[in-house]
Length: 265
Ligand code: SIN
Ligand code: FE2
Image 1 (cartoon, rainbow, N blue to C red):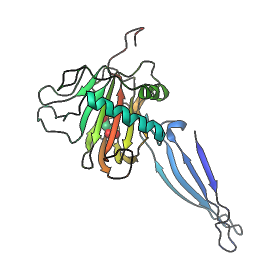
Image 2 (image 1 turned 180 degrees about the vertical axis):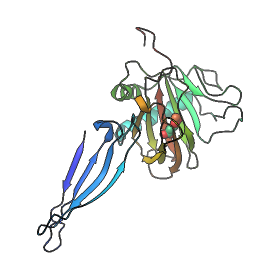
Image 3 (image 1 turned 90 degrees about the horizontal axis):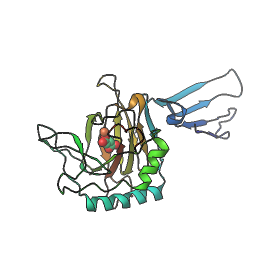
Image 4 (image 1 turned 30 degrees about the vertical axis):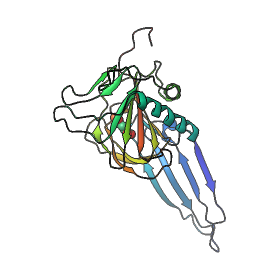
């Protein structure tokens, strides 16, 4: 748990002391579901306690962890370089919805032994090769395998890393990641580039959703009770990051697809 207190005792009016406590803690570290964003407290020195509390709280569904600024700028830059190399070998493709064939607004590719693809005829699935080139997907960069080891709490490595590219107009509707055979492994998501408005709900469409911004370097983990949480991206905030030369947002999601065989990776 990280808890930061900033004390400002001289922000005072005559006869009155003003003390602000600014507390920020990351819910991922103190247990699922709780993030106290900011709270202020102030009182008169003279007279009875005059307590006023203003608080803004973001309570995320259980099992959903948001780790703001988890990746340093150099790590983000290295990941962008790695993604560039992947896209050269495995070009971005246009995903289409099953049955209707309606094109999604993001552009996609993958790395890892398996990649997530979708098209009108065959729908959502994982496959070992790129749908256009027929080539195997490039390997998952070491930096992402390290991240998985740090945050997943899962003993085996990820098998797929879906790479979504968002232009300023792109978005992603509310959905669950449920094409995997092993829900005991989390989905680990990395944001690079422009900010987005991320929406997350519960494991059914009922029960409401919470929206918050994801910034470059943020990591989100959907695990445990939050593994099947509905989630989506409502909008991109253009020009909010200089990480990508031409703007836009990259999202990387690491997934475990199959049940590990006893003793294998
Ligand atoms: C996804 O759910 O595949 C992407 C989520 C995101 O872009 O943050
Ligand atoms: Fe997803």
